[in-house]
Structures are given as structure tokens and as C-alpha cells.
Amino acid sequence: MLTCVIIDDEQHALDLLRDYVSQVSFLDLKGAFNNPLEALHYVNEQAIDLIFVDIQMPQLTGLDFIKLVKRKTNIIITSAFKEYALEGFEYEVVDYLLKPISYDRFFRAVQKVMNQLAFEEEKQQEKQTDFIVVKTDAKNKLQKIELNEISHIEGLKNYVAIHTDQQRIVTLLNMKDLEEGLPRDQFIRVHKSYIIAIERIKSIDGNQIYLKNVKDGIQLSDTYKTAFFNILKQSLVGNKRKI
Image (tube, rainbow, N blue to C red; front, side, top):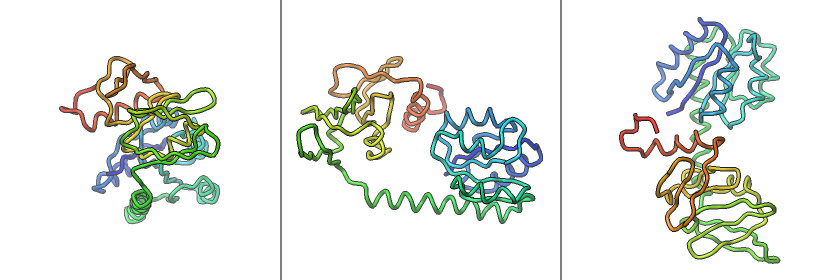
């Protein structure tokens, strides 16, 4: 299932795409916006798989909107103006739909997204291992660390500390490199200075996360709160309730 949003300042265009989305079993519409500024705030707070965006809108053009999207996602441009197509593809959009948009053309575009994501997932599974190898602060020393032994990762001033039940391993990698190298279904960033193992979560008290075999709580920052609770909701009993 792909989550998606539609952004277009023309109501009839919103209604048409909303109808098309409702006919595709693997699309889940999370919002339809005629104000691109409201949409921008939403997509930067929520994990969305696919964005349909118009080009010419009064508050913010579609191309400027794409530049301001912070989260990695798939984008399909919908426009009545073919002259923006070349520039649109420079932003690595998946497709460019020229209005008026037929259902057949719409479906081929979203199928392209689905195929692309399936291919990326297959590649990720092929290269995914159950361990990482890092260069430590000791000269020329590499260390293998089993993923299931990691409780959390702490970013310090000039280095990163990887905490396991047995030891604290210091590496000169940065938090971004480590975050990208860890499987997203097992680890999540909760603060600019902390990445935690999801299966180690024991309890949450306000903005403090407590992990198994870790004495002190780890702070959950506002920047990462929405994504963190979205992950938790997938395992929450009675998950229609708010947390």
C-alpha cells in the first residue's frame, strides 16, 4: 500500500485525481490540498510515499514545492503546461502527467512508482546483513558488530558511540552515515544525537524513551516525534486510538 497526497489549486483537478486514486487498490489517499503551503507542512511531518503536485499555483509553484520537501518521497507532476517537463525531470520526479489526464495514463504512472519501490526493496533485501563493520577510534582497527546486540547509538561532538550490552564502541563515523547504513525496520532516529533499536524499546514516559538493559532514558525530540509514533502505531493494540 502506498500513501499519497494530491496538491492542486483547482478543485476539479483535485476531485478527478481523488476519484482516480480511489480506483487503485494499492493507493491510500492521506490528503488533498488546494494550498501548497499547508501541503508542504504536512508532507514534511508525515512519511508519504507518493505526491501528486500541480506546477502553477498562486502561493507556491510546484517546482518550488519540490525543492522544499525534506523527506525522501516519489513525486508525480500534474500540469497543463508541457514546457515544464524537462525542468521537472531534473528534480528526479517519477513522471510528468499532462492535463487533461486519462485514467490509463494515471495508472501507468502509479504502477511505475510501485515497480520502482519493489525493485529498491529487493535490492535492499539482497544487500542487508545482520551486522555492520565500523572503523573505530583505534588506529586501523575495524570492528564487526551484530545488529541485535546494539541498544542505541549516541552522537557526540567529534565521534559516535555505539552501545551494546557488553561494550561501548567509539567510531569516527557521523550520525547520518550510520543512520543510512542501518535497516530502517530495526532502527529509528529519535533525536539529533540518538538512534535506538526499535525492539529494545521498553517504555515511553513523556519525552523519555527507556530501553531494555539501558539505565537512563533517551530523549525524544519534537523533530523526530511524529515519525517515531507512526512506527509505534503499527504495533499498538487498539491502534485507532491516539497516542
